[in-house]
Image 1 (cartoon, helix red, strand yellow):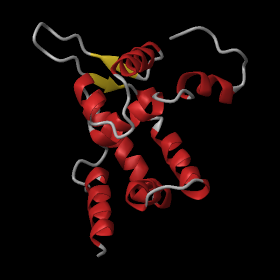
Image 2 (image 1 turned 45 degrees about the vertical axis):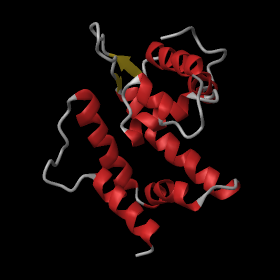
Image 3 (image 1 turned 120 degrees about the horizontal axis):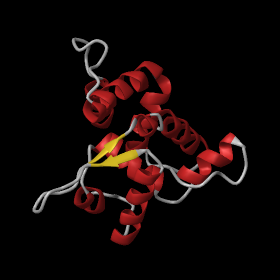
Image 4 (image 1 turned 30 degrees about the horizontal axis):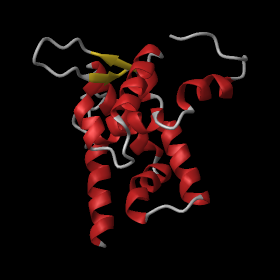
Length: 163
């Protein structure tokens, strides 16, 4: 991890890691877009992140302990995985999404997932369990239960289609 925060304030400590223009967007794309490689993160980013900025943010997120980077052998692409600290940014993103929907102009189709997760904390918990399974190899507590990602996708598609 990097240097000590400027102060002992918990909000300051979090903002020093997550408060730049791109870190949460990169984490969002890994969490919700299942983008695990540099090229996917670069080309499938709606906000148009520059390659040097993406490279810098990925390095920072690894250095800060929110991501790990698997060593890639020649010809392979390096894969990024969330750590537990990275997974625990999901409720922060839900809170930020809720604030954004309430206080900023947003597009309805891009806020559906935020609204659904704000309305259903169990959906967030289940998604965090899925992320732990995918990124950390920790089995979901109830493997027979429907996946939160599937519930979220189905609700999103139903909302988009107007059903």
